[in-house]
Each structure stands twice: as structure tokens, then as C-alpha cells.
Length: 410
Image 1 (spheres, rainbow, N blue to C red):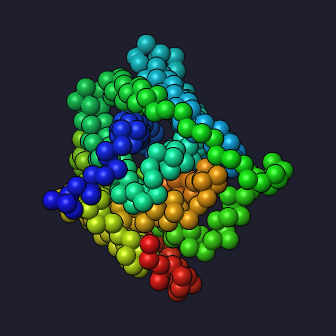
Image 2 (tube, rainbow, N blue to C red):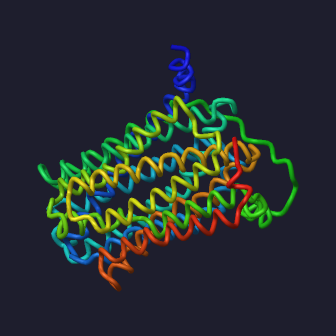
């Protein structure tokens, strides 16, 4: 009974609950939106490469704003920045709803371009939301609860990632695009309300008096001078970059597995189902013992899952393998986030998290672009298998080049 009580320690903090549920609802909305946009664009274009362009449209602004957003987060009220980031996401979702209504028939020929443009703006919001959310968590939770809080934060994020694609696919399939985007708008609004309930936090003291240019690059320098953080970020970056099969799921759902929009929602949800199961387990037993070895093993397992998924022609097998990939990914997320929280000074968490968003967050979208480009050049199935193989090669290189990471214990 005592062990169970320990597992819920972080959730007893009211502001952490508001923070966590705000992220749950914004994740629900954004994951629903990803499925809706992906299916809508593919239906309009019938081109796998167009799916990769969706990821690129979101990644470019996120990368371009990363360093400046990290700097702003470190000298400002982090709660306020996160609030306005969610507000901008709400605006983008409302815009997607607006242009998707049947009344705007004159936009039909430009609808795909309009969608890409809105996703680009959403990428700016994400460029600010990721470092502000990461830094705000450190102000809500005491250090001794970081592993537990990150496990719960990962669990609720993954619950949103489980339910979001399934709900989005089903609403789109049964009711239509307008109802789907309306649901996304409601989720974003709930997240805004929950974040507004968190009290204003003090702005971290600026311990150095250096020029703005140097402050902007300080996060990057810190990461490159910290071998453990650099190795962990690099490992996940290349794994996500090459191992991201998610962008090709509309093709698998529509042409290879023949399961349609409803099946697409299930395929998108499968990795997160596995991740939720694993993250809930990690709340009871954090993977901090032999953390480096666990990180390498799990990223390798993720790569193997991607290869098997690429070869699969069975819907059930594909669901199982994607769920296993989510389990492996959940462990690596908890370990990486714990490393960064513990080894980063409070007044640099915004900038270091911004660098992390360049390494990890944007590599999801750039990985989607890579998947779309590879699918166009070599075919969908070979491109997914290629990504899984490259993930395994990345693990081998990092394992041999970073003894410090291999031996890491938290």
C-alpha cells in the first residue's frame, strides 16, 4: 500500500493536476487535429509526399523560434507564455474549422495551401509551448518528485495521444470534418482554462550579464558541453528522425491495410496505448537505475518495431507492433526528460528545453518530411524499413561513442 501511495505523490499537488490535465486536453485536441489534417490532405492530394509537407510546415517555424523562445521563457512568466501558446493553438484550430466549412466553396482550390499556412502558425505556438511547459513543470514540482511527475506527465500526454487519434478518426469517419474540428476547438479551450488556474510564478534570476546574442546561444553551448544530455538528445533525435512511420499511416490505412479513416485512428492510437501502459508502470518503478543502458535498449527495440511494422500486412499485427514501439518510446522519454530536468540550472531550463525541442520535437515533423520524401523515392514500405534500420545503426554508434551514457544511473 505504501508503494501505491508513493506513486501518486506528484498528483497530490493541485497545480500539477491543473498543469497535467491542461496538457492532456491540448494533446487530445492536437492529436485529433493531426489525424484530421493528415486524412483531409491525403484525400485532397492522394500524394504521400504531401503528408511529409505537413510535418515540414510545422517543424520550420518551431525550429526558427526555438532559441528566441527559450530565451524569452527564461526571463518571463512561464505560465503566461504557455497560456498564450495555447491561445494561438486555439486560434489555429478555429481557422481550420472555418476554412473546412462548406460555405467557403471559393477556397476549394486553395484549401491545401491554407491548411499548410495554418499549420505553420501552429508551429510557432509549439515553438513557445514546449520550453515554457518544460520550465513551468520545474517550478511546480520539487526536485525529488521529478521522476514521478515526469512519469505521470508522460502518462497523461500519452492518454491524450491514445484517445485523440481514435476520437479524431471516428468523428471524421462517422460525422464529418466540421464536427471533428469543432471538437478540437473545445479541447483547446478547456486547456486554456486549466492553465489560467495556475498561479503566476517568479521569473528566475539572471545570474549573468552577457549580451543578448550570447544568451540566445547559451542553451546550445550548455547542451554541447554536457556529454550526457547531448548523447541522450542525439539518440532520440535520430531515432525519431529515421524511425517515424506515423506520417505514412494514412497510406497504410488507405492502401496497404485497407482500414479507412476509422482504422487510421486506431493505428495512430496504438503507439500511445503501449506508451500509457508503460508510463503508468514507470510511475511505480522509475527507470532511473541503469538509465543509460535502458535508454539504449529501448531505442533499439523501437527501431526493431518499426522494421516489423513496415513489413506487416496484417492490421492486428500492425496494432500490436505499434503498441510495443510506444512502450519502448515511453521509457526513453521519461529517462531523457529526467536527465534534462536534473542536470539543467533553473535559469536555463527554457533555453535548454528549446534546444531539446530542436533535437527531439521538431525531428518528429522533419522525420515526417523524410518519410514522405523517402516514400516518394523508394516506395512506402521500403522507406519505413529503411527508417527502422537507420534507428538501429544510430543506437550502435551512440552506444560505442558514449561510455558515460552507457554507465549512467540517476
